[in-house]
Length: 159
Image (cartoon, rainbow, N blue to C red; front, side):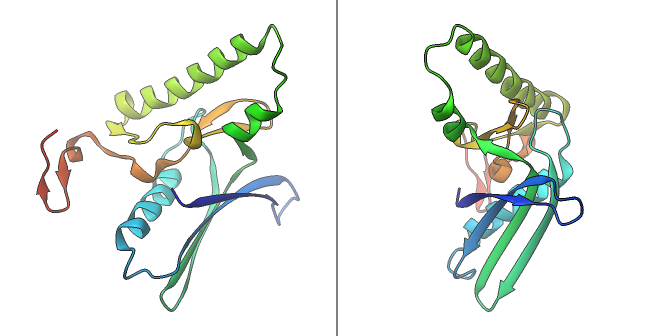
């Protein structure tokens, strides 16, 4: 958690983008939070799939003990915000929800079966919607290898 979503414009071509911003005011006191956010940014760079949020660029800015991470992605809207704008009484609503859930499930399946990764936090807050109304999985902060599950930084943690 800790990412704030903003709408932006790409410098190169003026296309709409999304900017996710993470701020930590004391990197020494909040080491774990910083590690998790850095993991999310790194995983977006290395994970490519049509149902996973597409990274365009990222940047870290350190000022003393303060760290800000910017992640620039394709233009999206958080799912919760998108659902508020949908008409509530449409016959196609249930089909649209089913399609969106299927898109997210396809992303989770890709991570688990093709990459041997566990997302670790699939929820409404990690799903975003593109301008074309496709649902995509983001929030890769807790993404980790299957083998790492149950092994904490201080040794084994049996499940």
